[in-house]
Length: 348
Ligand code: P6P
Image 1: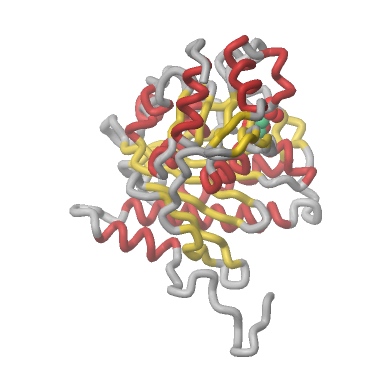
Image 2 (image 1 turned 90 degrees about the vertical axis):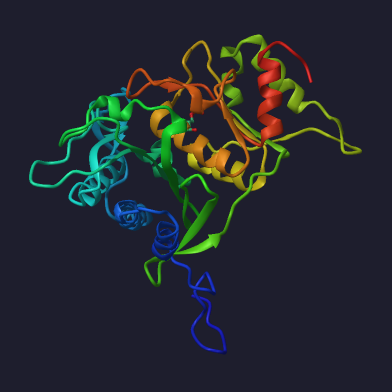
């Protein structure tokens, strides 16, 4: 804790803008807003604080490593994955704001228990993305997407989950990195809040994030080069080739963490492009559409960037399956457009 001569350190955000107040003020600007949304966000923020606390002590709390189970993706489930999933479900299930949930850790949608009221929203989430990095202390994150339900009746159904990215009413992620930052958008601007652990509150730290039109870095796992098609290889080779940009000869620089939330957060703030292309091993791509690509696309477009599967907007993909995958190219508008041009067989 940094001590100042004039007393306790100021909160992170001098005007003391907390996440809760930010959402409340936004709610008041929406005619007919019922507070449902605000309540849901407060519960998500609580879950983020609980997950953060456990992530920060994982090695000490004996919850590193594997549970011995495999999830619907066939991936080994880390103890923290399961913990984060359970915390999110327990934090939002009783609030009466949701008619259904869906999680990367659950094969089927999760119904609201009978003893609780249901509401008009659907929440889809990846409770702890990048969890293979937990044991080596690399940044990981929680990703969430909110839709309004499209069905009627007490409980929602799969149809409420299988909605296009363009119909999201909000999306966000929490990055458990050198600090814990929650970034969210309801479509009108993107805002970041940093957790002040001494207070236990998220304070506004990144107001109205805008992704630069072009950036210097590209972020892709080049260990998959042998699995890519020719156009994808040509695109990455182009990025690595020194060329004149704004009077300077340089090549793009590579940045790859292997944790979507970390790679996306850097791309959102600094510009550039993150990509997980389709390849011979993952012909549909590796990342999941509904609770990874679509929420990140919602945030990126709200910040002035772009998000594509290489051919079309992520937002325009009509989901067919809950855990379907998609290739993803996301970040600065000009950089994503360049990737799409190469994937069409054009050159720079
Ligand atoms: P690869 C983490 O396992 C994850 O789902 C994303 O967070 C990340 O972007 C991607 O996979 C990394 O995949 O194949 O490069 O290790």
